[in-house]
Image (cartoon, rainbow, N blue to C red; front, top):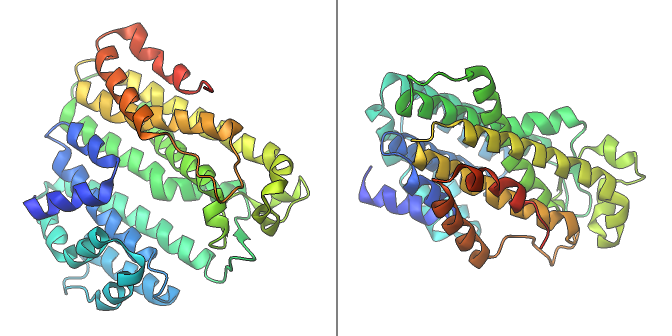
Length: 337
């Protein structure tokens, strides 16, 4: 990967860049490339000044470039022009270097290429579905998902599939000869990804509502006497709590499966253990905040302070060689402080 694309990884991946840096060298290029292309599709999907139909068409064309069924270079000028107002400088540079990233696909082995293409196809399908589902949503009238199954499907498309991709890639490249219960290992990898996405959904609920999006299912809201638009009022928090806390518990259960996934990794895979533990433990700390925080207040964004993140990361380093200390980190992350 060129120094420029390495720089883009650093500038666009924020906290995930730490995870990328700690990954074993045998999987870092493939996962880094998949991340860059996923961020590209995400930037296109989020460029609100471009009509939904045009964003869907651009995402579809990019998906075809990724899977090899379209060879002609993409014309991203419309998205680039609109991104001046809605995207960061790093995201605009990412769009400008799309073809450079696409060319790197040819450097992958057949198995790695198939996995990268599969995960990006699933992610893009989730982004397109999201655009179409909320095409007519308005900030004053949020549109909600219609069932728990829709939310589960969404979390798989945009994150659970990443856990699946990560598992297949690292299993093949890092510890192919180790005997594991592969079916359970893969399922826990999927739940790991879905759990992280649920944490994001719950944390970002006030912001998403003001963009017309409500990922909590409408029938569940109705069961406690709420419409999606009611959630724009922070004073309805106590009424929402039974629904919200069920999904918070679901996220915790999914991340607990992710922690089991981390414990299943061979002990000599120290880099992979750290790369998996960090987002899980940060997710656990976020869930602890969501248990007691003001979950509907748009002025409050519940997040783990940077100082606490640094302390958490350093703690994983010294605990790594000690089984009991390592295993106990998940339960400690959930404690309210």
